[in-house]
Image (cartoon, rainbow, N blue to C red; front, side, top):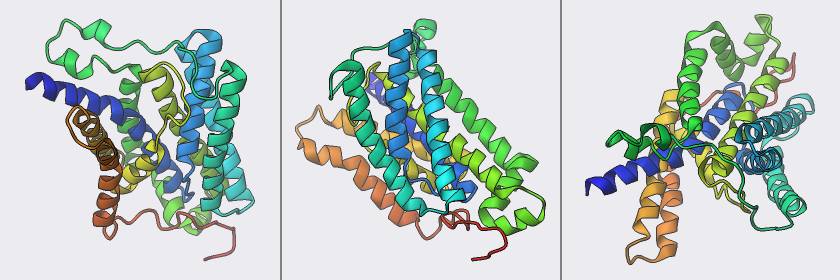
Length: 306
């Protein structure tokens, strides 16, 4: 029984990693007033480019760099279209998701000659090689890698940045009252473009955490709704880094529970529905109390108030 519980908790930590990273990215984007529902597509392309970088170099860190560059490019594109061109932010996010679906299959076929799955690539070593002799701790954290440690640092750093620094105060003002930030001498458009890029980079790293962190290959559609789940964790976590971390763990636990239930004689389709049904229920229950940044989704045009 104890081994089962430890295995379940270890799976929860591993599964929650990409969800938390992606939700943190969404937080920075929405905190500055730009909605990005294209996180699913960015995660998928981040997973692909992470695998490509690792494949061509034989080094997982190069793969991570590929994912970061991809995230910066997609983030810049989304920022330019929504901030400079004032395109509809929801439609632009949907376009990114469609781009991720199509481009990932095309590049998968070009690089590996297979439209379904890549070959095995270099990945990050697990912590088990360091802590395998420590009882309990090795069961909990042994299957994790350095990206989990990076995620913990990012959660803590994001909290202090958003709520304990003048830059974080400016970020919150931009998301709530961009005209007030403008009157304070803050370059709203430049700040928004920067934070949207940061958000996309974190989402791409979340994707790379799947392909070169967990299973060491890329497969078609491997993100499997985690980008949307991250957006749910963002709302459930009330755009707060620590609460996002806790809500990400919750969603990770639900997915780990779904995996563990598959060994029992339950209909597989019903079990696979569990994480998504609970996500919808939690969003409905918390929707009235979750008030995000007031200007999220509204284009800011200097001199024009909504």
